[in-house]
Image 1 (tube, rainbow over the protein chains, first blue to last red):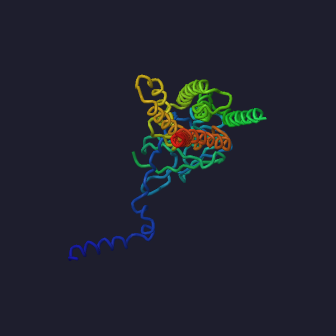
Image 2: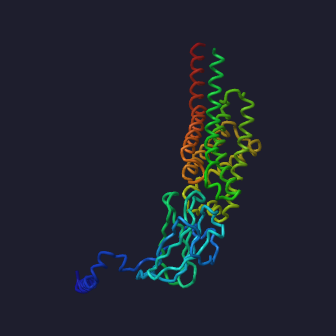
Image 3: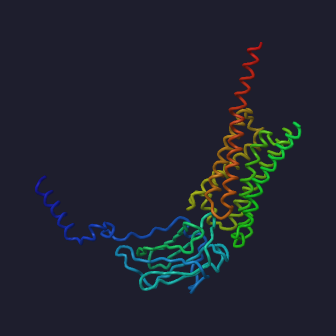
Amino acid sequence: MNRRRFLVAAGAAGLVLTQSPLALTLPAQAKGLAPTPTMRGGANNYRPNAPLVDRLGSGFWVTGTVRRAGDGAPLSGVRIQIWAATTIGGEREPRNHGSVLTAADGTFRLETEQIVPNFGEPHAHLAYDDGAFKTVFLRPVMPSARDTSVNADFVLAPA
Amino acid sequence: MAKQHKNLVSFGIWSGIALLVAVPVVLATTSPYLGYRSMAYIIGGFAGILALALFLLQPLLALGALPGVNKAHSRLCHRWVGASIVVAVLLHVGGLYLTSPADTVDALLLVSPTAFSIYGVIAMWGVVFTAVLVVCRRRLRLRYSTWQLVHNGLALVVVISTVIHAVMIQGAMEEISKWVLCLAVLATTTGALVLHWVVKPLSRRRRLDRKALSD
């Protein structure tokens, strides 16, 4: 090992030591929280600008969180659009489309009618499509058609 | 006595087939999901179930194994059931397209998020290819043995992919009756193929050997 390589190695080691212990145990945090990629088929039967609603039905909950890529800070007041096939009709049924805003802690939840299997799988669709961040479409699948909730988390990257 | 026994076996086979087909269809009609679905989706779904059920009959008709149906009549039925399968597949894909064009196009382009769609698409192209070969059979002037090999190979691919497609799908059929029908379809298909390609040639050779020995 020559002198220059030793100095570079020592410098790198020193840099690691100055980081907080959390950064050592959570290497993903050091690089920053990665944005959620859009899922295959996530945008199917999307009707842009679903109205803001208090609820779309009762008995089933679509929940999740919205955070900023990088530092993972919760994002409040972000509009998430939600749609799914339920007991009142298919994914193209307008009454199955609605939007909610995230709370101060970045969480959102919307009560709907029971989601039922559609095209072979029980699943929901969620979209962030408002410009400030890159558009993301999610399509979480319920492990069982009998589930009464489904969760989807967004990590958004600046547009 | 022998005739009575034959009648009993024939009755057993036909009622078995009727039950294997009817029970899954009837149970599928009792699904509460039907009330939440459009007519196009319901027709598309039942066309798929019908196609699966028809695969139970096809190998038996090809063999002429159904009691009370003579060989010539059996071959004719095999063609009509084949044509019905093509129509059922068209109704299945058409109904799904009307229900959700985006999901259906995703499946056809092999970019669907659902793992089972690829098997449905393989089965669809298998059926289409089979139909084209049937229509062009004379013009292609295939040797009969070549034709049989290609037709049976396609049939095996279509049946296996249809069964995988069906068992992975949630929300169209009742689970137990679906599994029973799928296993029965696999049994008649593989049974017919083994009989045609293994058992029959072996017994033919044994018969020839015996004839050669006695000459």
